[in-house]
Length: 417
Image 1 (tube, rainbow, N blue to C red):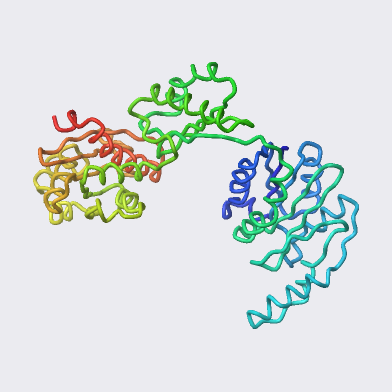
Image 2 (spheres, one colour):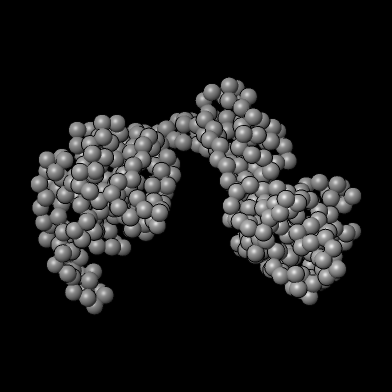
């Protein structure tokens, strides 16, 4: 069975609202063996909606739509689909009473316009919505299934889990999607592709998607199969080979974020870390504390944007800043060593750089970042040149700082040299 997802709502065609429902539905459908072959985002125009549903019926067994089931004039999904299928709408008094009761529970009177949510196309199955006023609808037409869900995420998820998934699971067949989530850092998308591409011909029954971001490059090898054991074995094998090709750049084979990997490493080594951040502005500390239980390894940090605070809070000599500049390897080393000594952490991390968009010079351009790492034997430092805007540069810098901690324990001899 294949599926198309249609996200309805003019707000989804603006830069202010993200369609997260489609992402969640895709994952849930894949779990029960349904392939999503097409997605569409359409506004509240009946003509555009009608066109989207018409084309979906020509290529998909299952169409799941989200949104447009509210009580206002711009909620036109049920009317548009009913007209397309040539079905009349009828008012379901039982649904009206349920909506009225929901309003009463909140000490409110149901507005008359909410009766629109009780209009049901002929032959449709009503799927109750315990978390809202708009029930979902299940329709069947010439071998196709159309499911209309409310757009509010917690309502959509509740109805799908309780009403839609059990129905689909009974008819979707026994083929399932099996996948892995590999995470790398320090390699660009093309570098990752070059390393793993020879494996594609060896495993023609798998497909691999490569996604690049400032927090690293992800690989998602996947396969559809009716044999779970064979699929898992196949993915284990290709994952092992990808791991060999990617080497030390691979930090997770099960979708862990780098901060989760670093948290585990620090806990395993009974180690602690403290940070002194300039250009990242607290982003590194925020990521380290994203992980539950972070108090066991994260002692604290300082956001020392000004040169004065680099000196007074972390102990960077003022003369060093004056002679070398705040963005320098020497200051990164002093930040790392200073925060380690002042907190008593096993490791100190110092970050300083030019995040932009201004402030760069020919000698110290935008994107230049120095990251220092210090232990009891002293600090060491590395300089980076990151591309992109201010946000991407800060993300790259926090990722590289976390990776410096990971590599400290991955290559202990080199880290202590």
